[in-house]
Image (cartoon, rainbow, N blue to C red; front, top):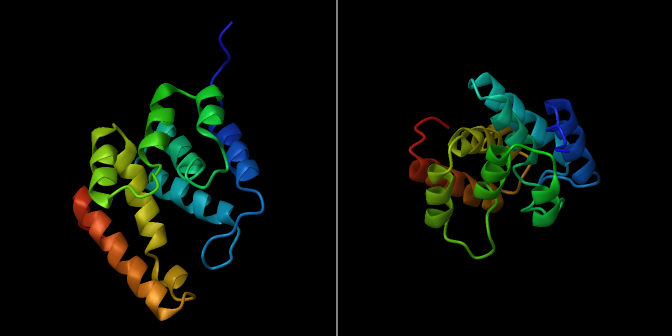
Length: 151
């Protein structure tokens, strides 16, 4: 018998649990970033699958979930594909990362919302200047690779 896919609320709970105790670069609970990205996807007209991928977009990269955990989760294949596309691999050139995102249906919108939250001036303002400048340049470059014209 096939298990029903997780609801969006269940995906949120899974993501919050997986990232429990993790903080972002500014020391804030990591779930705040996930919630902001999911909301950004929703506001951009994203589908429930894209919103689910937003909740989980950093789970494998941050080792909150293993690739096997993701594979075993009762999620639609399109959600799993987006999460894997959005998972930056160690040493991977940004150009290859962006190409994989563009090649995966739905993933670019999730990354757009992720970059918008990452580049939020309020969020960046608490970082030291060299880190802030490095990240601002990186986010702008990734946006350019993805063809995103707005910050």
